Every structure is written in C-alpha cells, then in structure tokens.
Amino acid sequence: MTIGTPVKIKDYNVHAVVTKSTSDGVTIRDANGREYFCFESELVISTKELVKQ
Image 1 (tube, rainbow, N blue to C red):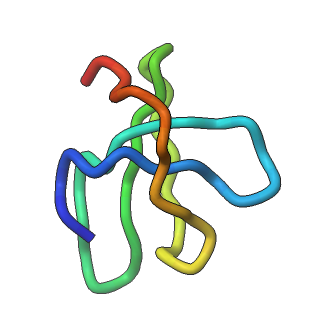
Image 2: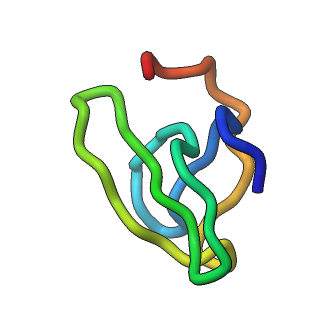
C-alpha cells in the first residue's frame, strides 16, 4: 500500500493515512497522532478527506 493513502479500519470509525508499509503490514496514523499497525486486509481505502500527517 502506498504511503499517504487515506484508509479506514474495517468495522471501526478510524480514518487515517498510511505512514509506513512493510512486508508484514502497514503502519497508519490518525488525526490525533495515534499510530496503529494493521494488516492490509483490515483496511479499506477511505473516501473521506485526508487527515493531517
């Protein structure tokens, strides 16, 4: 997944952007600055406006 892609965690109201992508998964950061590690299968491309990085 490309860095800077707006995403949403499936089944949660968390919108974020991809900050790091590795072979194990991706790290995303939400608008509050919290970082999450997720697998790509847990994410969907967000249609909301980009959040601050």
